Image (cartoon, rainbow, N blue to C red; front, side, top):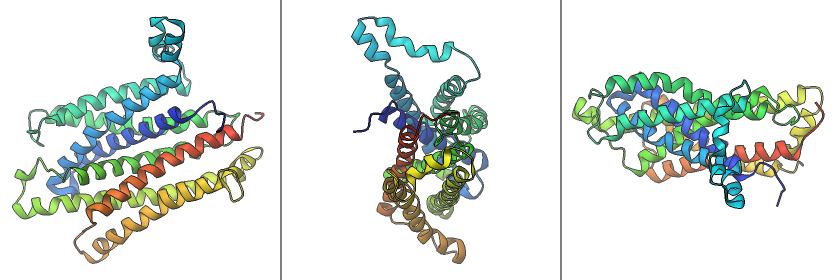
Amino acid sequence: MLDLNWGLPVIGYLFLAGVGAGAFTVSSSVLLRGGGFSSDHFSVARYGALLAPIPMMVGTGLIILELGTFQAAIANGDIGLFFRWINLFLTINMSPMSIGSWVLGLCILVSLIYAYTFLSKESAPDDDKKGLRQALAWVGIPLGISVAIYTGVMLGATPARPFWNSPVLALLFLISALSTGVAGILLLRALFGGHNPSQKMGTQSESANAPNRATYLLASSDSLLIGAEILTVFLFIMFAHLTIGNPAQAVSIILPGGELATLFWVGVVAVGLVIPVLIELRYVIPTLLYRQPYAMPRGVEMAVCVVILIGGFMLRYVVVVAGQLTGPMGI
């Protein structure tokens, strides 16, 4: 296949860090806002909290493997090389890699403590961990957004790679992270039956309607995010064409006739964005305009979430591969 310096471990890291950061941000904002989620806001926040640290830790493990730490230790018989990745945190400067490593590490730590406050089956909105949980949520929103943006800034700060060297890339990765984070939360709710730890708070009818109401709000929010992501893809392409120099030539790799055009327009845009948003709108619009009960079938909901997650992975795959196939070029 292609001879790439950055392969699947880096792509997996960018994707998983985005999913975890997105889930953390969404969970924290839902917990603090509550609002239209009624009494089910705690359940939504709980699914996001329990999900968030897992993909971020797995993604970090992938990037450590990519650094060659373990391979070097085994090849040289030097146990100390197993811990070479710690150098990422010992070198402190203003580079995106250094700042991003510290932000990601802090985000994982905070998300783990945040998840702990939801871990007990007896956890509830007004339990003894309420104060800690809300304080961590306030910290979690800027941290999650920072990690999601950082994954795009890390690539965008490479001027010799014109496909990556775009300020729009960080915005694209942020929106994609939030969308895949919502998809991850919806998938967990669908898989585990929408367990609601806060049912005792409301009336019986309110508790019965809360899961559908929460799912509707998440799905409608995800539709808006996907719409914004489609617009950002357009802006990414337009920025490249309006920039003097190599970016227009680089972005042609994903345009019709380009080497990655089919993968991008079918895998990312059609399958990962357009199809899921059309399905979501099919169930969101009747509730939004005509106040009909929101009733997306469980199987359809899980399929849409899986497709959105696949689309998020394919976006990172195309971006990382395209940047390497079209560079380096003169600055």
